[in-house]
Length: 129
Image (cartoon, rainbow, N blue to C red; front, side, top):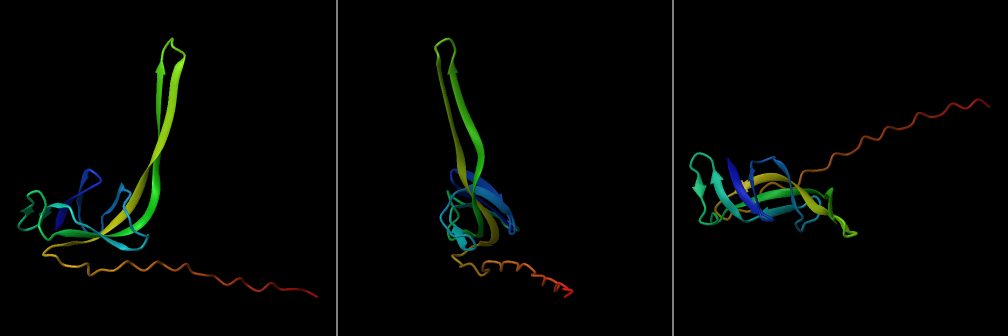
């Protein structure tokens, strides 16, 4: 099963366990957010929304918030001694799609537990006194 969602003015085709980068949305890292603008739900019998599919949503886990690559806008007017340099970085949210929901269902899958780092005990130092 797949879905086409719209967020931040862009459309994405998603399936469960997809990891995608979208424009920044509200939500703490590790929480589950629901994306409600579902344009199409595909599978055995595809459902096309007019403009969105009623009762459908996509649940996703927020993995991290970060900033995109640096974009430089440089304008120069030749022979006028005029130039302008301006730059910015987009705010990005990284999501993992957990499930595609229909019929106003609530998410059943919670956030995945974080892997614990294995702590290796240091060997006792032999001291010769």
